[in-house]
Length: 347
Length: 110
Image 1: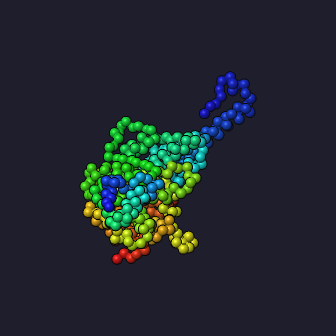
Image 2: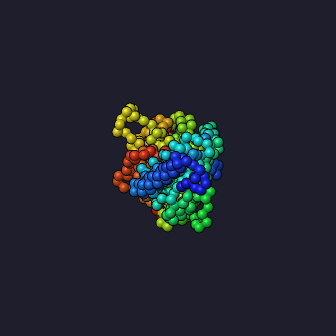
Image 3: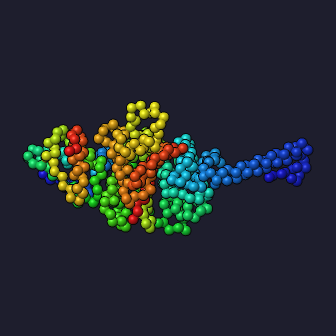
């Protein structure tokens, strides 16, 4: 707080002195109030797992992920966070700086990291916007390790020399149906997993998912995002973890509507996804011989060695298991822009 | 007449359409299958397609576009007697292919 002193203040008349002192006191009060509000908001984030985004400087956007930064465990908070970031990206403000504050993140899932990577990488091709991305690390070392090991820091050009990059993780992306990429991931799995039937199915699954992305996902020609798909594969002690995602329009917006379904208030995104998984004639092409891609995905999810197979798209989330009720679909409160598949292959 | 996919086309079959990526079902059908099928008909022979020895599996969309598409072009059930599939690595592929052909021709599955 600056209070003028010395000769300067002696020369001022009393009214002027009083004005300056009151001004300083008002600024001090404002700062105290801001700090109290910030403290209350941060406590709210920790409690509720939601996030909020603040704009500190004129062209900087500060994004604070929720403490539980996971689609599977905190879908509402995570999708809400991403939707706010996407809205800011769509504003197309040139030279925008995106600051990701991971300080309060206590747990994080691979799906969230991949989705964030996808958003950042997809926009890298839009040169005229000149977006830049930076951020800080979490207080939680496990979160930092996963961010580093997954390649996130490498993508945003932060190198943490305390952790060695893991060789049991592969991240791939592309814009076409790449047999080379699918072959590469299968070779990665085959080093430690000998079941040819499952690996064959895995290969077919990747080809089908890439085909769906290329043909259906990016229908919005005005989208500022690259038309990429992303694959994450990681080997752990007793299983392989996979994520496949795109940032397109989502399955519910691409499946064919029947009769006057759009007037039916009971139909929602999760029901459309379930119907497409069950092969109920939902091909966007209208060809009755098509629409076998998602049923194949469901068959894959029902294989014995496949666990925790989850599809998230739009407002819908479906879990596929190999039990009697093999698909459990629920409607979420926030919309995911795009489609995310995640599953484990047990060794 | 004989086509061996792993020798004449690719070890890693791809997706459905040519504009989606390499080694697609459409590419296989247009560049190989149709040409060889027509030649085999002229010579009064069967076309034998050998699916074995590929490094990777055959995605359903690849097979459907290749063989289902061929059935659409041929247009009648003569294709069922003029086409032979060898698939000892994965016998289910043979069943899938003929099912796809029958579906395209509007025939029952029996």
